[in-house]
Image (cartoon, rainbow, N blue to C red; front, side, top):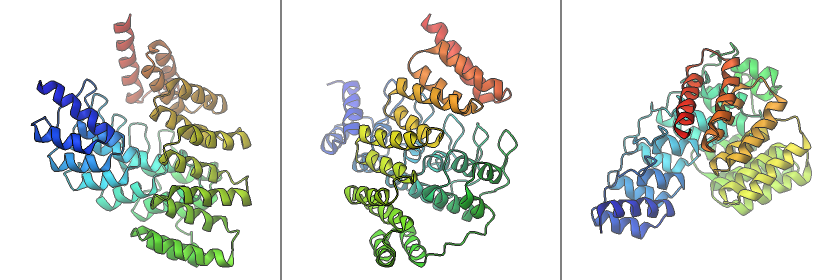
Length: 389
């Protein structure tokens, strides 16, 4: 059998999580860092599908954690962007470049802060990924977690972690606004308090549980939360933490049940639809997860947070037509959000609709004419359009 065929089989087996086949192919002399047409190595393929055991085997075989595909993504950045903190921790032991960035100029910390991956944020910060790095959109991790977050329980915890790690609250975005200004405008009152460094958690059970969870003692953390629930069974914050800790233990059904108990107490607490969606995503139930985002959007049609995160998930699923639809809805609500136009352009490019992608990116350029990232993407889309024609 030709080596090319063996190498291709290695990438496919890695993506499928077939540990026995991967081990056999490596023993037969396949190239551990062979790249497919998209520039993916077997390690990248395994990382994208969160195949932890295969990733470990490939790393032991010498695969390069900093190898880039044709989109300039590395396995290390990919694990951070998808919240795969177990893989991220493995890669840190095998020479991951903490300062490496994706094509948007973001480190592993930025997308994990944006998407609400608390444990991944903690792993990045503990490893020393720069907390104040600014990407090509002009955002730091702190700015992303405020602008693209909702100020709820999960994002407040992420913002607290960033502030404790030395995040500069005075970093300005390309519009000249700080994270504090954004938090005030978005009425994220708890976040404002955290950024002003005067927030104090008054619930002792939550304080103890969070300290235990920070060192991965989730079962002990749940015991502390349950003590609190004995005295206050309707406390939604305690319900959230119990659900989150169960989720980190991969007890997904129990976590989902806890979030649903909270929604039964208050169906208008939209935060919990985000938590149920995240849990269902981890359970690999995409349609049910997407439905949770929709429930929140139906309850508050003017809230962009849930639509934005739904569009992110649709892009991850490769469902770009639907992602474009969500971006159009977002732009109808907030036409000044040039970052929405940018994401819309990326999905249109993935669909091969290069003329429409150019028009979308031109909308972003109109709002931020000096941003080199937007001009680069326009030039690339023009090049792709010419090739297509």
